Amino acid sequence: MKTRFILIQTSHAGNVGACARAMKTMGFDDLVLVQPRWANVLRREETIQRASGALDVLNNARIVDTLDEALDGISHLCATAMTPRDFGPPTRAPREHFEMLLKKERVALAPIAPEAENASEAVPPAGEAGIGFLFGSERFGMANEDVYRCNVALSIPTNPQFGSLNLGAAIQVIAYEWRQALGGFGVQEATPGRQLADAGQVAGMLAHWEQALTAIGFLDPAAPKKLMPRLNQLFNRAQLGSEEIHILRGVAKAMIETAQPKR
Image 1 (cartoon, rainbow, N blue to C red):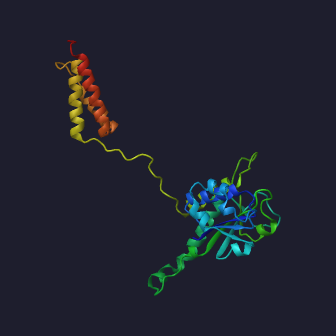
Image 2: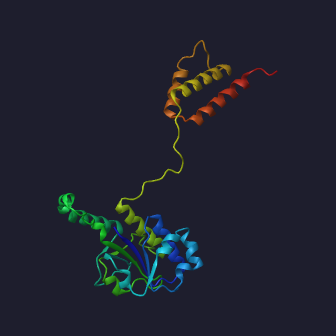
Image 3: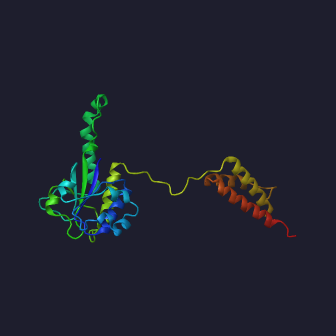
């Protein structure tokens, strides 16, 4: 679904950069600024620094004079306002609203799905309709007239005694919740996958340990009992990797060398 983040009369250049960074981390790149304080805000040093590499989002961003210009192609508007309005749209938590919105979209698509398979031209997905997230100025928030034209007022659940979020943080939360509603991204492994040792490596290591335990007097070859089978089970449960096999064989080697009589 087309997704646009719209900042209205932003007064701090750093928040524009923080917005670009928050958007890019969640895979969004459509940013529109309505009457920002600085005409060159997209090129200011503080903006670029706070973007932390999300320069493509800044390069694609647009600055417009009116909110109407920012809403071109957007059919569903979400205000981000903590203060309820008497005649405003319903207030919902982002996750709750996104679930409702996408559910309605799936229901609306269901009747046309069979026909779409036989159509000569592809039926435009419901995602062609765009969703816009409006954020007001840091100092005054959103104006009533801007909130009234929205379909919903999103309220981020926060500590009732302290619900203050700066603009960059609020944008990050909304971007995350919307991305999760759309399916999210898979978690990337921080470390490469381990290569498990094969049965031959484990058997060789156990033989080495049997020799070492005998050398230090811990294992009596005449009465081994079940020591080695138990160690075998222990190491199998440990799911040893190749590097760990090398370490354990190094320990066994050190035990053997230590047990040898000094010359």
